[in-house]
Length: 328
Image: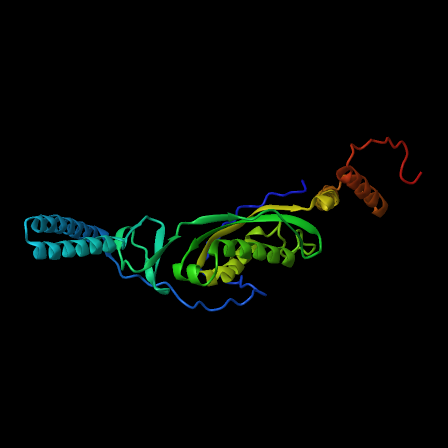
């Protein structure tokens, strides 16, 4: 047995906290001020086509107006030039509303600071060019904590690390409810891992108690439930969470290793004794049933003692020749 035991992979994919794993002592997060809605947009191909047509018409108007002005029609030429310039500027301005949205991305749209919606449809889309658009990735992400050193429920220093798979669920909350949702997830993940670590021991003294090493699946469910509550305000969904590192701190690792080894030896001896008692019982029962040796209480006790020594001893038994009897 080593000081660091492998932690079984126990993925959990909750959309809501699993039943029976409701987190406790988790701070209550404020309600979100805004929630995601779909932004009004049109296909960008049509907008691009209209913009190019307007651009070409504006250029043509400027060129034709210049020709009229040079030919003597100064008033008509100047008017046509002005109209061409306005159409050209309007076309360029309108094409500023074009957005290329890749799969796994979204655009948070604001008009003069007010949230107007989110574009999730991939491809070329067009929105009001007066709006500002912020790109938000909706792809699945990983966050792995550094190796954290904390005290478990028994006060023993331990080291642990976790990996969390998460995804932005509500782009409006991720943008407006927190300053930096990536940093927010990282900080809340570390806080949740530390909180879970101090709630449970590395190894439980009670056989029915939960421990970080012996009940990784249940602890992982509680970690996922607590993370779900903590990051809900940022519009983030926890896809999966698991422990990647779990060990005693170096300063107590050798002492805890001896404790684990002693526990293994005690458990092995207990199994050996239970098996030996059953074998001795069977042997005495068969001898008494076949009645080929008459055993009084003293001989029965001696036989039980010898059989237990042979079966439970950690060394090879040394036979002893008895030339007399038990009574001489």
